[in-house]
Length: 562
Image (cartoon, rainbow, N blue to C red; front, side, top):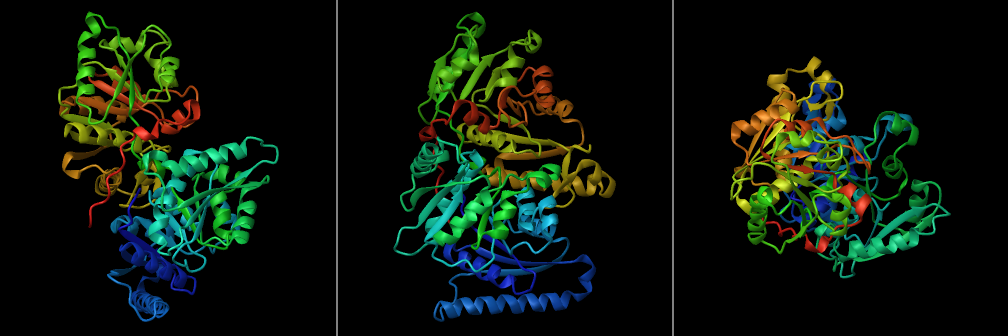
């Protein structure tokens, strides 16, 4: 799914840092990745830089020496180690350095702070995962390779499914033992839940068969483990101790504030209770998987007004690299039930008139407020081939969906992509003050950092990081950042670059049913005549319609040697 080319290990220079460095070095050796070691010291201790640097060098040498002794004198082959001392807050310094070295995995030690503080703000590992988009391995003892048995906490949501898929892909390189490693999907169900066993069996078959467009797991034995109880963390902890697993994998919910204080965090509890290392997977990680597109539902009349649109769609179908089924729907019938019956991955409508958006509440507005699948609104038909795509990106998780669709179109048409992000300096906005740093409120950043000299460069680098994670070719991408309101700027930028297609999100809410249409989507539809691809959170599709046809998803290409 995601190759590991760079690993960042963070140490506090104490005894708890030894297992972190040893585990990171063993993993780097196993997958032939670069190893970066960082120590984040308090800013007021910068005068002790020489002491910190020498102590870090001593710890790195000691840990690598112990690894060589365990390997009977054989030094790690091709292991490249770089080390750095940074003066910052722990989680923030680690985030910044992870972005600097393009880390694919971050390795840290267990939480040492007060339990109440961890419950309110999360552990250092969780705070890293909330702002980073790479997994974080929390090591309370040295990770022993090869890994023979790993567990994944599953709740049948897309986030935990992505964690299971990631574990299934990473486990074989981490286990060179002749014995096939075991991946246990553990689910904690309420005592009265009679359907949990059936759902778990289905989840096992789904992961084993290649969920999220991945290849079927042939090098890993997948099994289901069902536990009964009212609390998740104690049940998983008890099972982990009994089964003697080598690694536990869990997705994070990244909840904040009062929700975290009231409900706590399963990830926090697991990293502090489970006796083995815990791999935390960001909640948006599964969205890096390819987007399914096998069936397109078209709700356009075959009359004089729709004839040109139909001809454009048929030409797109003929030029598709993979077979693409096009199903005609009655535009006068309820579209979403018809699209669901067709098991469509994309719905296409034709609204050539700008005033069509405001015709009645039951037309385009209602469709976009309720749709669980992307909708392509055709107006001025895109050129053939599509030459220029504008993508409006914010700091929410839906950027994966937008860039995923952009990548599909770039691969198909060799198009150019302009990514635009409008900085929101309000209390609800999220921005970065340093490249790779944590997200802070827009108003806070405005008060403590310069917009032109700090925030804009940091957000530009954040966008380029998204480009890399989405697999887009940087040679085909332009990145723009502005401080104008996004609902005003996107139509203006689209006109300025003569975009053939604009990609926006219908709404940011993850809940099912009706969700208010975003202001940006409304502006994109009301203020221009360009065609617009309105995307949605894929989790809505799964929650309302069930699983898409993952067999039709293009398998990711194997990574090229670095």
